[in-house]
Length: 468
Ligand SMILES: [Zn+2]
Ligand SMILES: [Zn+2]
Image (cartoon, rainbow, N blue to C red):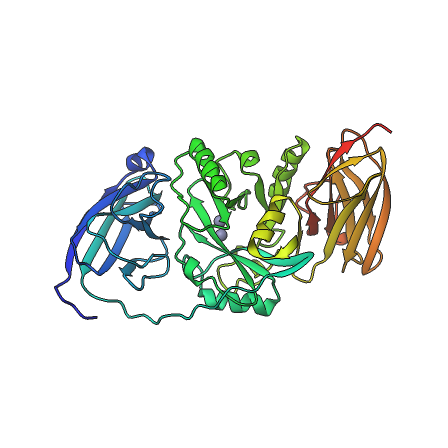
């Protein structure tokens, strides 16, 4: 590191109390940075006063208007409570932070008051600036894959973390693991930051740029992003503002793991957001709660699209069966093999979720008088109609068809790969139709029982029942 002038440091210390948290989840500390600075180094620490857990998150904004939803170009990084120090230079920054010019003016450290014990937390923040440089190795950019035409099912994982937040692998490593696993696409969704975006290039796997908007009342994946998405949600009104903002940009928001221990989703408005991660990590990890929540909206006739995501953080250490790449796998029926086509098909609900990349695979179609309808579509059906189920790797599993009335068909699958045609009597009360494959040994009749281990599930076909 070469220095043209000495590094200047200042330290801020204090106590954060529960009163502070009541005023808002975030607190800002201003630091003035003079002209000509090329490097910022920040260190911070905290400890509880008395009993209880203290967790304080950290990030930084450059000078200017940093109010909610107005700070897109002022955001310079976030590391939650995952790092105790970070650096920003022109050409390089610690993962999670955005390199670039360091403008003169008042920069703001943001502290996220995640967990404050009864007697409060003592904290210190030290910020140093200099004309130093960062050592870094420039990365070669690989062009994105060429667009392949053709309608088909492609498979991916929509929820992955890297070293840019609290994961253990670099973007290159994540891409290599995903290619090796045989995935066609992945979404990298680091917490509250976009520092991974410039690295999302690969020539034989599609990488969807994402951010997991991580608030203290729930997590929201936003896919297809081009810029940072603000995570500083104050309450339920802010989530509506954020949803409006995200939609205006053409991004796709998904409510993540809305279940106990998810952490759960406490910000409501699922029907306005429109997408739900109904299956996160292994099925047994409380996903029956998310399934019940999803169905409660479908029963009201609301179109909510279900997706899956492994939420994998640790590729190297491994978390055994609990957290594995492509567990579950999300299948999307696309018209073209590119990122915008994937997002478009998710919007249409052309999505199936399976336990792994090997399946078991399950597709549902409904034959009406005029045409054959696919999942995600609206079918005008007469009271007697035909369901076609395309199953791969399903031998010995239990197939269920579910509508608003509950389970309307249940049978054991007898062959490994098969196409089943079943006559259905539907009524105006059915509203929608979706399919599931369950493990036989655990399958019980109760629709949302914890006992049921789902191996595959489809999004619904919505029904408009005609009088015969
Ligand atoms: Zn999450
Ligand atoms: Zn996550």
